[in-house]
Length: 237
Ligand code: C5P
Image (cartoon, rainbow, N blue to C red; front, side, top):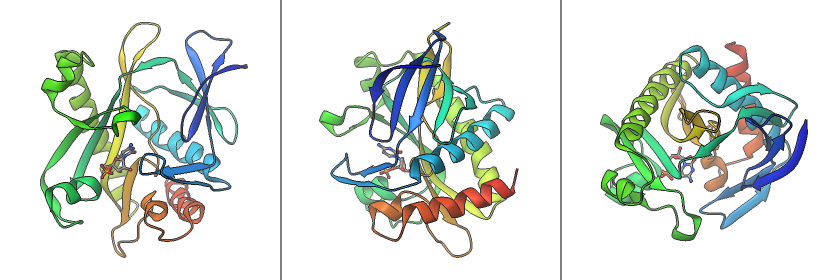
């Protein structure tokens, strides 16, 4: 049962439920980019992200990646385990793109020699700065063991999802993950969302972008793009 709203983010609302260790996430139609400097309401986006992230979490669960997803409840809602989010954006990169390509002067699209994991401190007021492991310990955001587990799980997610998308003719360029400690026992699990809002996905043949860069860079209609992606994922189930 949906109870009081706990939190409203840029793309989701989080509600209490009658179960103390379960929360309800409602995906909104809002799209934001560049720390919410660019905003739009795109009809159907919430439902598409709910559907896509549910499929991805189910795939990860089958592959043994512990995550917060329990089940889909409605077109835009899903039930998840309650966690305390660790305020880190864990970014995994296979191909240079976006902020890393820009920051380091690397051409977008250049495959990386090795997968790169970056951490950003989740603080809208600071613009989510890139941090090192030393900063993470200084800020007390995670323990050494937790950071090691985060790296391992992020790497496993990359292996599972790179293969999953590759089989559909899509290259997983990069993505962002968030982890949390389960409210009931402190266990570290994958949380938040994994969707085209948080991944870069390029068609292997045409190079077409199937992710939020379509909105960030004004390349077309975002819901149409997400619908195409969902059709490809759905056909693979
Ligand atoms: O912008 P940047 O290149 O750092 O993004 C890397 C990846 O992390 C992209 O897939 C992007 O969608 C995702 N990301 C995100 N939320 C953020 C920052 C990045 O989902 N706040």
